[in-house]
Image 1 (cartoon, rainbow, N blue to C red):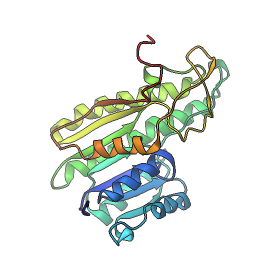
Image 2: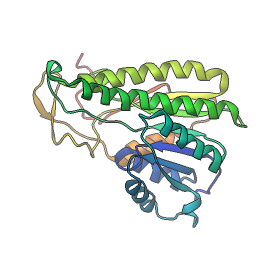
Image 3: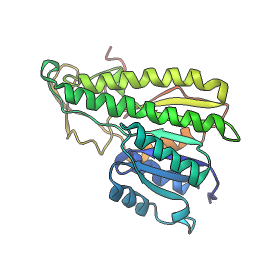
Length: 254
């Protein structure tokens, strides 16, 4: 049986979906986990779903609401981690949005900014704060994983804002991986295919704009991959990992 330990994880977008499923596995694996998101009620529900595997859930899971697009909110979030738990070993930059699909020429600037602010700037602000903590703590270092997308390789039609934001995130991942090397900070990215909780519905727009049904991965399988990355030894880094349903028609499409 897994035993509790003192490693600390922070998961953004922890109130639902991939974030919630990842929190459950991290807690079950003995981590102390800070859950962040915009809705405190959803964060508390995520904690309640973890059960109480070691009899001290109030000392192992913490709900801290924060809007990752706001520098002051992100700074306060990391102030909590520093003051309450003393260090940070793993950051999962999971918070993100998928903007409504529409032709590029009809895309409002506000939706473009929402995608970039959440998916790219939010990850940047959290990564910046994590670097400051991980460089200063003893032992030094830690791991950061960003939630990317296979849209980098195979974008859908009418998704310009989302696709651009994920390309920006990949640039951040690669730059941060390089900057983190001297400080024992490993930075990588998990590029995901369709997942079962997706709000897009069963019919998805392909690259040519047509609607088609696609296989999806179970949340539990995605979360287990997040846990695998979190537990990698410090001397190993996965800069980019693509996870997709075996039957998804992606490889070989060109």
